[in-house]
Image (cartoon, rainbow, N blue to C red):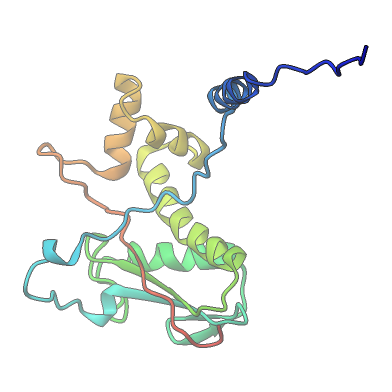
Length: 194
């Protein structure tokens, strides 16, 4: 009598594989990248039909080339990020005193432009210096440290005290208008060097 080979039942293998796949899909978490928290410009159809003319004196221009070298207000910049932050603060708070600088903090714009070959590290360093200038101005106006200001600005409605400090720092008027906006203009990169 010939002995038959026992068969392994595999009719439910597809069901088991499907159940395992479903289990792993349901239990796996996928890390999502946060990216940069930057307010994007409005779509072209939302822009007014007329272009707004901005006087040159109200624009603080920072350019970064593909070698990560800075050109600030048309001059090569060899100083530190701290000194760049200080220059930006002087520009914003000029209030018309220096005729070559901004008319007022309301009209001051910090423009940042990079080449395609600029490293992310350098771009973020310069962007941080520009944002630091605004945070220092706001913290000074609120009468708090910059660290405390960043905490307040992350949740201004945390308590009545933080709301008051936030309103003082940003110079929020009774109708909700902000006195000193964080006016950062990030231009599209040039194709030079990249």
